[in-house]
Image 1: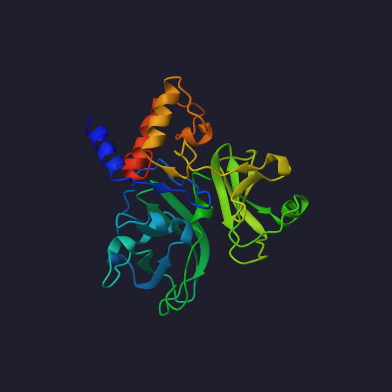
Image 2: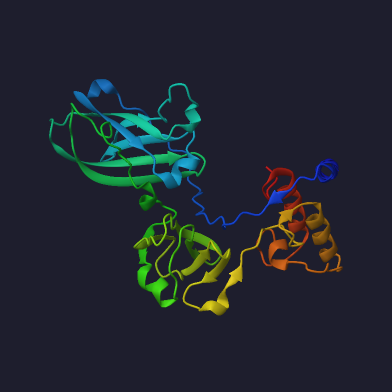
Length: 308
């Protein structure tokens, strides 16, 4: 009942959610790993240390929080542990770098195999990346130039990572990329990779695709920024489809109380003129039912289908 009153109030204020030009294709990085019980090393057990400033790569930066942890291991031995670095004059939750003291008994200049492990609290995932470094007691790492490990290549959720060459694929479909165009890779309806053309006639050589296992069927979709349409690559122009605003059941370019009423009427069997079934299927399960009715109300009230 409370949400009904909120909805009426918002309708009175003419709250509107406007369509965006481009589809919001994003990889779902969330996983199911528990927070690790990492314990900081006992510094008295080591003769020296080196300093590492580790920056989180762009794809994971939106999910960084003060509850994250970065650890460095030599074998199974934890040598350093840190939370996000404090930003002077800023909010610590927005920090995307970790300042680590990596302790050791190795000689200066000795090569050692290390593993960086990054626990992301929002995603419930431990990203891992191993490499050989030259242990440098005096200079450290990532201080003079960025140290940005590609943690997405060490995701337990997506252990199979492949690069798809887009050059011949786009050429065979008669596509000349323009600024703002987007290519997305999908397994079913799940986005597994995305790249955007940022300059006119620029063409990235590859698209990185993240897979749960070998042999998954990947579909490539192309968004044309000029026409605001999406087509499936490799299936010809006839497969082109218009991008819709999820929740905009009436097709008027906004999500408001008219869509809420339209979905309710559809469920009751009174199909409105111009009703857009694709936009009305808010949760994307292929069926328009009460969950979509609630979802569009949440879109109006909170800006997302979950109501949070």
